[in-house]
Length: 209
Length: 209
Image 1 (cartoon, chains in turn green, orange):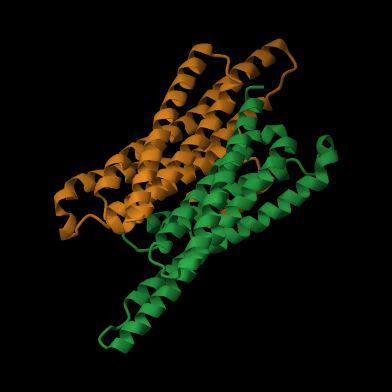
Image 2 (cartoon, chains in turn orange, purple; image 1 turned 180 degrees about the vertical axis):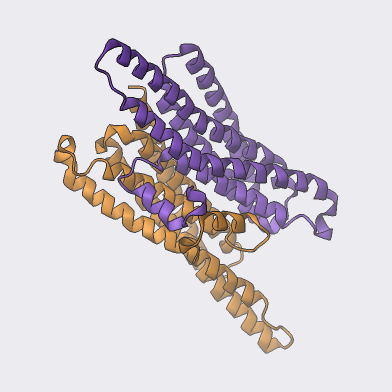
């Protein structure tokens, strides 16, 4: 579990010639960093008299973003372990026709499982982005740039996760599944980017006063 | 130094009600994660017969991205310490006119130093993004989605750093400095986003074969 290890170790391993952590894992971490910023802005709003009228709503957003942060950090580690199963499936023997068929099936199963990880990360990033529509309006304005960073990093996490879904889709034979996932990630990305642009624009307006 | 601490601790502290790590620090970390992906793709290209003709160029890019990664990780920690100096300056006594003037000057100095950190991170993210124009063409195609994630995360790091420069600019009185920095970050962002779009488009082409 990288989550319990040194920050430096995670970075060094991801930069190195090791097969993992790769793009799926670091994208999940970027999303978790974005969720952190939403939680930070919420934590600096909750419990303050000045923001008492939005207290309940912000508490709700805080709990939601903390849940997504936990999920994204788990996916950061899960991506590393699922990836190794794909490599293992590709390494299966293929001397007989029976072995070839078993290997092919195992690869498809491993790819589906490997795709599920960035797809979950993609959805969690989108969930945080959607919650920022409200947070940017009601969060403590001293933390407004952090809400903007939340939008930027969760969108990056979403786009990075999308690329990692797509690279698995390219090898999957189940066309119905491929079409369904492709439709989901394309339409969600379109909407998420709109929200990101709106949130960052509002942040910028508030910064320039 | 968070870099030597637990990954979980950095995330928990940034999500909490502590004043730092905040948006500047996590943006630098996102940029470092992007640089990691460029290094990873380079490491899987260097030393392979198949890519011998681009070996020298990729080695150069690898060294460049590793330097930027080190810089961004240092800035991740520096942002935390500079931020505390701003808070300290705001906390200075302001009973006499002399104290008020000293406090005002200290705040301006601390803000300039605090702005310099995300500005450095902004530049380092841009440097990595520019290097991806070449890397996306010559890197081991098995790692192509990681080059895409590098572009996405470095751009997010750049945009997050930009917001944190802007929030300091809003309080700085040195108009010449403010105008110069604003011009730099606006024009660089425009160009960096163009490169990001081109790199991600090429990655997507290569993924879909």
